[in-house]
Image (cartoon, rainbow, N blue to C red; front, top):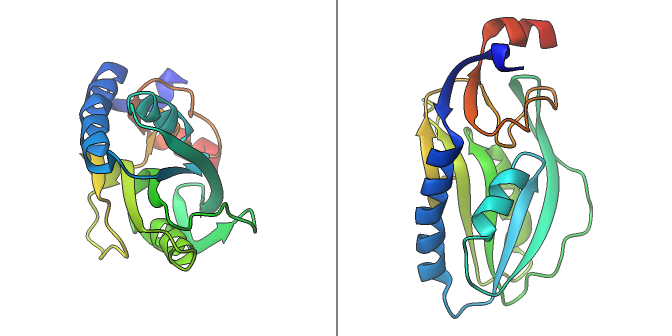
Length: 180
């Protein structure tokens, strides 16, 4: 598995240090507010667990399962895997996602949640990919900006593999070719 990684972008210690900073920012912004954190599965589950343990506020947690990728390419369509969402009326919502590139997924989720009466909806991503195209939505909190490369680890996958790596790394071309 490690031989499939071309380079490591962020080691676990770097990620956790940055999450301390993000948690402090989020705690400051949401102190005294009713907050619901929605993690977008499956990619954000590691990020969610590590970040939320660092936020010393009462909060509710929910998960939302969506998909928009097949292999290394976005399908251009966001598919919700569940029809019912929790009640977010009169609560502040913080969406957690693993990576932001086109913004389609976060935009589709924000659209769906905006009619549910949330007081506010903000987004927090582990990674924001530097892409030339215009994003449909940007993130309010970003752990790291990355180049436009296909990354895995720390919850991010390629065909459901590599999620358990403790770092974020760039997948090499050989691994991508074998997976197709």
